[in-house]
Image (cartoon, rainbow, N blue to C red):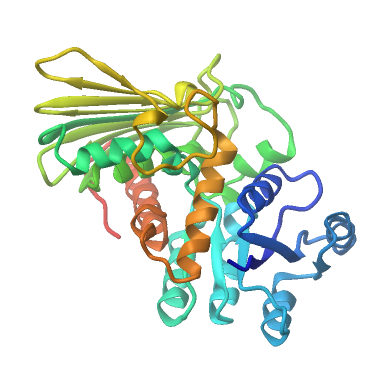
Length: 364
């Protein structure tokens, strides 16, 4: 299959997530990065593009205008900018008929989310959101087990994402924009809470109807939440909870999910991502590994660890197949609906917290 010509917005020299996307996109040979507007600083954009050997643009608008006119123009674009800069390029490229692969969360505000949704509805191009953890093999296996009824009726859902890197007033490129309300939109709630929300939604196939939230800024003077505790109510009668914190000292990247049904339970942790614990009600717990993963979302034999990069690569592999017309993996790749769900979660949780945890409906 001919590689898909890929462009990139953001991700210039020294950018963490841009490099991750570039590695993931080329891991299976399904994408070829050919152009980019890699920085809002023209000199840095030019230098970064030269280092990668790709066409350089001074702005995403210039790239969205020029590339469709080229015979060798890009077919898809990866947007790897801070949250508040997702909407404008996403809309521009969707309007140009170019597929969009956007880093999560969808945007910084509900208004920006609506702008993307409107553009996506009118476009012939597709929109994808890179919630990479849902592409890990044992998460996909967990989803399959819930869907086939192995847990019975889901009763309890608990997702946590704990970090400690913002326990103090850290100053760095990554910390500065993540703790700026204008750029991030939401703090721990948006940065990692949306991962926990999407993971629970992806595995259970259910979206909570109501939330009760307590958002805190633990570090003095921080203008944005760094700890979020959210209770969940589902229309099915299930109950759940999300705890997302970036001030949990000693925690590095503690993402976990537990789902309890009336017949069995599942437990998965990112720190041991290749093991899924399945606990039937009337039998011993079973430790499942990649050898049991029916989605075959891996590149090395079981026992040869894969992880963070491969999750992104699984998404890019599935996205390439979808763009080329194979829709068999479409239901497991996060898209606009996942992004809008995450934004609805953020909006409802903020509203609830402002009203002392009042139960608040999650409205798309």
